[in-house]
Amino acid sequence: MNSFSRRNFLTTLAGAAGAAPWLLNAASQDDIPPPPQVTLGKTGITCSRLAQGTGMKGGNRQSNHTRMGFEALVNLFRHGYERGVTFFDLADMYGSHPYFREALRHIPRDKIAILTKLWWRFDGKPDETPDDYKRRSCQMALERFLTEIATDRLDFVLLHCVTVENWDQELAPYMETLAKAKEKGTVRALGVSCHSLIALKKAAEHPWVDAVLARINPKGAKMDGTVEEVVPVLRRIKENGKTLLGMKIYGEGTLAHMKDECMKYAQGLGLIDAMTVGAESPAEIDESLRLMAKYPAAPII
Image 1 (cartoon, rainbow, N blue to C red):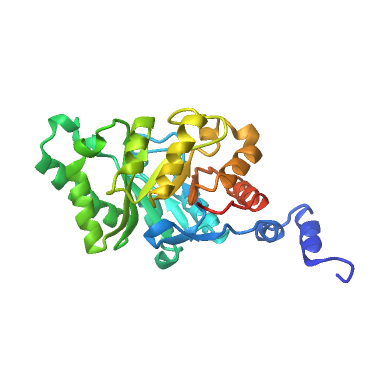
Image 2: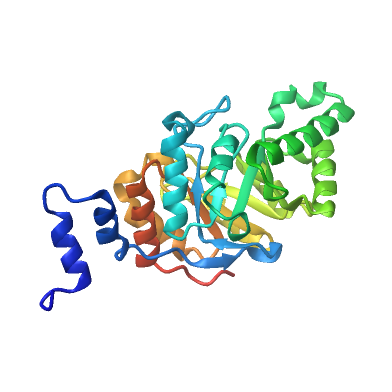
């Protein structure tokens, strides 16, 4: 042992046939830096700069993550937390709430931030749905989310996938209900996830919005417009004092061959408060953590 460091000793043993799983984990743990802990804009919410997403190929209350099954996904949550991830990105549309409820048996609620999203389209077309129905539906959804996750509060609730310019008019009853929940402390911050440039521009200016989940990467893959079109809007979001959360950092996997460049770009923008990555394995979580450490974030404007 005198001629070996602890890491070399563990690595040597881990490479031996029949090495125990815990030993393999111990050998690699030292090489993986935890993500920075950051305070997200004016929300006062402190969590890891990297959020663990749950919506790869998500829809109809399932995703690649939930299709893993309870044991695999809960273990993935636990792996992220053990690596220092304290921000978890859920959604009703992904069906990920009950899975995270199980993870909270092992992860302390007061050490993490939970983001979820309301899929208002379950209620039908906005212009054909009565406002009172929208309000009651939103309230019932919030109560269900709290039960499904087994928590007394949600750190972020976003209106999921807004696409039209007048989303604030179509979804006003949901916004009113969420604002009341924020006043009561059931929800800490409100916002939208955007899936069009025109909706993103509205979110940048709207006073109701605390946080925007926006698609950004260096190639414009799966984004709301070209990089040249989107970045000025993201800058406007920050200039207006809102929290900016990045998604599609690797272009929903289409840019997996250039993750180094993608992380370097996201970290160097000086605009993103935190980013969500939908890792589907412990190795993918570890890879993003290494890249985040390799390319420290530029100061946020």
